[in-house]
Length: 450
Image 1 (spheres, rainbow, N blue to C red):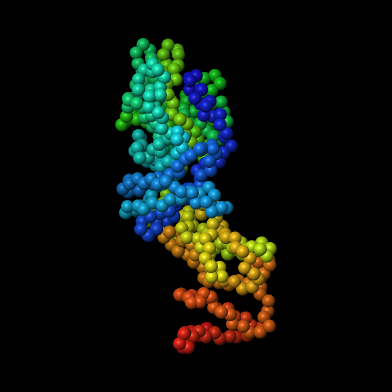
Image 2: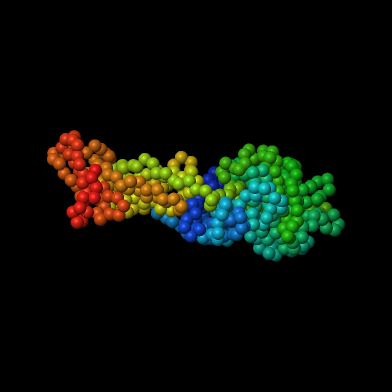
């Protein structure tokens, strides 16, 4: 297993104190036209020279697949690492599963669909493809195209991890002539620990030495320890393997699943063993895998709620206006607007998860001056619109304050004017008393008495 040790060393000697590079993958509720908006955050921890960010979605009923490239939003400081796209679905119903991925030449960072029924081998559509590998890159003299890996894939369930590998022949022999044996493996490296050892699902048949299974491999002395059985099958030209997460957790490198970092490193490899010698044949480029999928329920939706309006002056130069947005379905808002003194502003949030606690949306405005100001908020999760009543506040240098007692009666201009469904009418009184407010139309006819 010396060659496998070298491969493992090349993967684990990387910075491990990293957060998940893909995070906060969310969608709106289903919008008119059967479309949905999708966001994700990507932080590039590897300094990739160029990459594409892709959103994959799959309808559970029809099995239809969708794939869209995402665009950077920007809008600092709220969405400096956020990307978005929208997908129009054909007759959506039930659950839509979706996940994000990043592709950069020979490097892939990806989530995947899950395999909740533990189907083996999984439907090919459930696998997330990992980094492709070149065809014909095995060393001269390699025994056959079955040792030339061309790609791999991965998926998961609550209890198992599944991997597939492709090669140049579509066949996966475990032995040849004159005591020659072939080893095929898929490496799982925990990013929570920096260790001179790793874990691999291995498909081979070397009598008394190596059988199909999950193994702990020590990089320092090339020793290996059997952890548990694997499922394995050759189907459709692919080699499929699966291990139990409980067996993975028997490895001293794995205390918890999924990793606390949220991701792991993976790679496939082939080795030829003959007469006590090991020959490294091929490996796939290492990929980053996040065992996560997201769900959009097209049949049920809970409207979002707006809470706790905020007005926070910054001296006499600026005003921060905020509102708290909460959505039990974790639907992102497709509309997030503030009306303040007759002007419309788009709001933003540095929190991109909406069902745990709440997300605070805000907007920095120029200081509007001390006095009365009108405001309203309007948000939509795509399916439901929530809007606060048009209201007014009196702003002083420290925020919302009680207005001074006026010296005389005064009726202010209503706002907005003209208006459609509602308007705000303010007046001031020098003392507490009963009032009657009458509203007239443009022809002078009384239409309302309050």
